[in-house]
Length: 136
Image 1 (cartoon, rainbow, N blue to C red):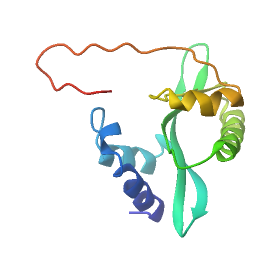
Image 2 (cartoon, rainbow, N blue to C red):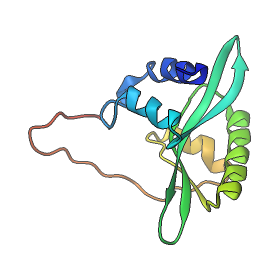
Image 3 (cartoon, one colour):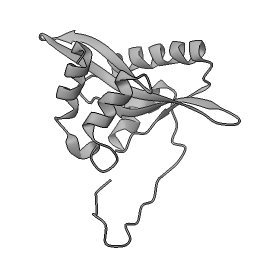
Image 4 (cartoon, rainbow, N blue to C red):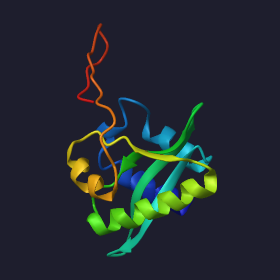
């Protein structure tokens, strides 16, 4: 396994509950490894690689996105501003015209609204049937 994938696995295993209702950590790592997901590094801090987040490019009829599907909570606002600048450059190179953050928690609003983001949707969920219930 590549070194960056080892770092990613270590980070994702800190909060497996964020992934396991949707996909396994191994599936996430495989998608990063084959290019379906993009891994964003924030440098090295205290001898540990800091991972900013994971994006997935999505193309629709009238727009295309770099969608943040996971974001590390270990940074301050200035680091996220740098990351968003990098994402904007990435969008320009890839021909994407929107950044979407699948935040999951309202705490992210305070971080990203000052960077030009707005709330565009609210997800309502109702579990039905006998399947497992999750908080997500």
